[in-house]
Image 1 (cartoon, rainbow, N blue to C red):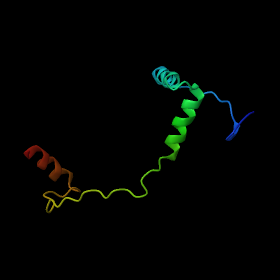
Image 2 (image 1 turned 90 degrees about the vertical axis):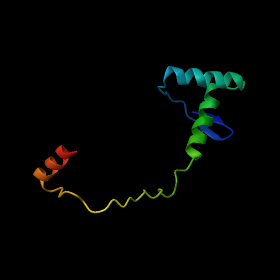
Image 3 (image 1 turned 180 degrees about the vertical axis):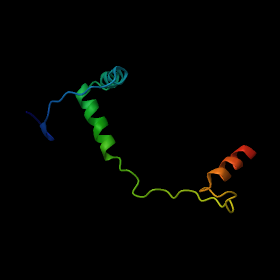
Image 4 (image 1 turned 90 degrees about the horizontal axis):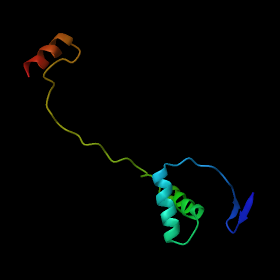
Length: 83
């Protein structure tokens, strides 16, 4: 196991799409750093993003009373054929 200023480093294998690896390598070259450093930064930033603590309410629509009894199959067929 390797050590680094932040603690221990673990070597692992990831299977990534080719286009993603090329983009990561370009970013590493642009920043004059290693592929590992770019991947670690991207993962760290992704993990720091917290999901919303509360789901947004769904919209409510007032559409009036039902025009057909949904438990009556024949009534449903007739309603669908009428449109």
